[in-house]
Length: 218
Image (cartoon, rainbow, N blue to C red):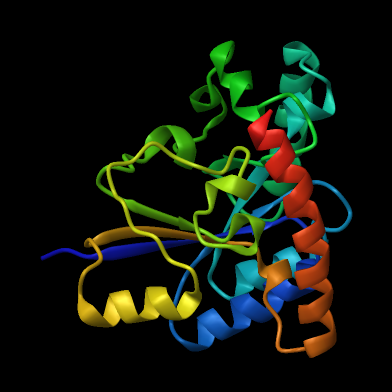
């Protein structure tokens, strides 16, 4: 039976971490997709070039509607401009929204008025993947699929897996209970072998999760 895993990385911050991840994947013969924001913490041209050279896909992690506070026309012009920018480094064909948790605007709503297909884009995961067939796993909120801390990075699905740790996922894979099609989304800024940075991420994300939980509860 056909099996596949789509590995998606959202490069929100600390682009240097993504390069480390990309090198590890390349050594293992794995090709992943890295979605870069235009902000300076993510948009590092030298790192983007290195990740492309390692054989990975690059896409645009768009947040245009939240940047322009719901103004679709200005957001679209910004989207087109930044899409062309990232195409300097890779022939971008897929995009993925940035959750922008502090904004009231959902960046996906730009496509209620426009069509991303008109700009040479063939896929946006939240629109073009059937998550009743593809199991979705995301580390948003520094947890796995925990909707208490997840404002927008969640999908409609019939799957009902609950993982508290990465070890739980590894055990599930080893036991063969996961479906044949999986998408795993990680934010490389969260992953490190440096105990100082690991603890820093732990404390910062714990604080952010409290805020996000209040937003989710409304």
